[in-house]
Length: 391
Image (cartoon, rainbow, N blue to C red; front, side):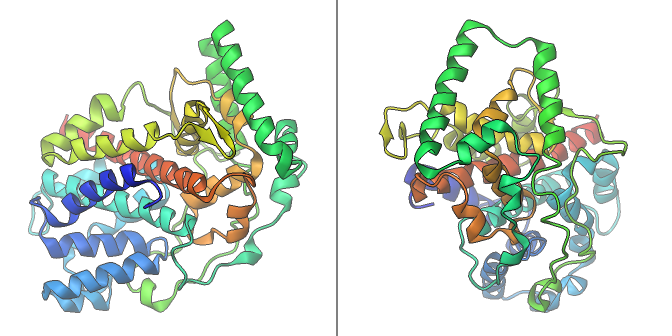
């Protein structure tokens, strides 16, 4: 993150506030929730870091023997943790009601919002850790990655062109950005066309990485003690031949119009800090792409952010999802899906397989966008459920 100091400042402000400043939850709860969240993705780097922080507090050290040694109130958070980490669209107001109902181990709404922000923060941070290769203690399953995911029969024509050679990759991408901008200025897609393109992109996301994630990854004992129901993992939002949940329309419940105010009301100032962080990463630009300077990258940044939300079933009515398919080559889509949905399976080969001419700092920027898009998606689903419970 130090490669992007402006973003790093914003990130640290929100993380310090979550973990150390005044808030609804006691300090040892905060670090234990961080451990629970990071353990869902086997991120020993984060788990060990917060075990150390928990030890320093000098309370309830027996909880570190595993989740079953924690108090009932924290154990009750396990279901929400696993659903939020892997299939947040399944969260309903009933999950909220079960946690806040009256009783000895109930959560207040303020405590629950604090917990939810912590869970989403550390799920997403695990994605960044694995995507940036900061988890050296965990062996990487290189055998799970298959180059046929880049060159398979289902690969669209534009992906072949973008992937044909490192030399032509950058020029093709810039040409596509220029052409898309010209087309947008000439004639905007109709509402029906944009809906059709979203549905097409959502269905095509099923094919990205298909077959790569079938093998089960065995949990190490040092992480598994903080995980219950380890067989519960990511499943595609849009599954063929099944009744799928309805699409989440951002126009009906958005961060800007709904989530921000709810979070700020129940957990003072965190909404402001999160909003600053989301805006910073989306607006972050140095106006260059690899060796080219003076480039407007806003279209590419939005495509990356919105593709993550598309995989999570979130649709923006005013966005043309045809841009995603034009700008993100298949190898990049495989990387995005892995980092976002299966971060513990991320490999160096996946990282190296896209944008060969781009700087490392530019790929770190990609990871920052994926991290914040994932966090916002988790928050949207949970905050909507809290809103429904409150009304």
